[in-house]
Length: 395
Ligand code: PMP
Image (cartoon, rainbow, N blue to C red; front, side, top):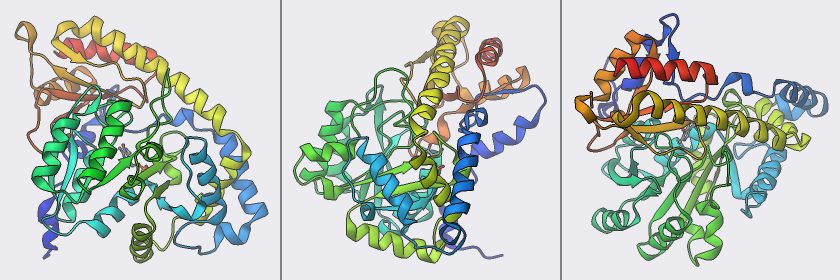
């Protein structure tokens, strides 16, 4: 079959290939990007879906507006207000997961050959999605405080990107959190160099101790001229349920209109049943307790993983303890002649009964072969300790 030439720009992700090996019995997996199914508020969602059907069967089961189901847009507007963002219900559109928002940004903003700056490392599906639209990705380096803003400025000046895509809060895979000072600097750069910042924020509510700094979108209040240069993508996937496929995009009206048009040709609208359920759920007032619960459980697991990594791998690995999200991003140091190639370690680890994802595919440019991503989300503390001990043995 003759496929479209745009497919020449992407290949099946190496991670998908690795996932095929995970079926092996007894494997402890730190490889996935999933939240823990045991954390889903099933009772709350049962009630919400029953209410959606009882109170608004027409809305919940009929075709709906492409922009999103009005009661959900209103609830999301209130949810964002709780996070310091003033946005009217018609200032956002509901998307089928935040993944669709990324796709719509590709469709509406990227022409073949356009440059887009991303973090190195960044979310693999973003790399693939933007490349499908022909983007040339430029990688901006990060450290524990997120993207290095001085380097980012140089790259903006040099490449004049269509936009800059950041995961400022508990990045996937980096776990890094962009500092307050750097967030403001990013906005100043957007204004100074007339570029657009896309803030992808599926993990911002998943913090363990201190709340992260305000989102880049909420900081636009402090930087004149910056609001019309920021796109913000949100999601209920990591805190409530990824299966609902509820995400949203906040963007300037002109871009929202184009994205809505493209969405119309793509899926017409996000499932009205899922939207009505999510609206009822947010209205029920259960979200704060759900958030408190997931934060507590993931915080315990992250603490256990950090301690186990130190104990079992010592100076053979370096990492920053994440303050939220789902991931540890680590680097093999090669100390005392130990292995420093995460691909080789991944194969050996599978033989020892533990899985993780090597970091290289998360780089749009210049992969660092010593890096790896470990998710602490789906294994309990006991499994985490056993899994990291196996990783130590593999190393
Ligand atoms: N952005 C990032 C950074 C992610 O990690 C994910 C999920 N892995 C998504 C977007 C997409 O999530 P969803 O479509 O489920 O909202």
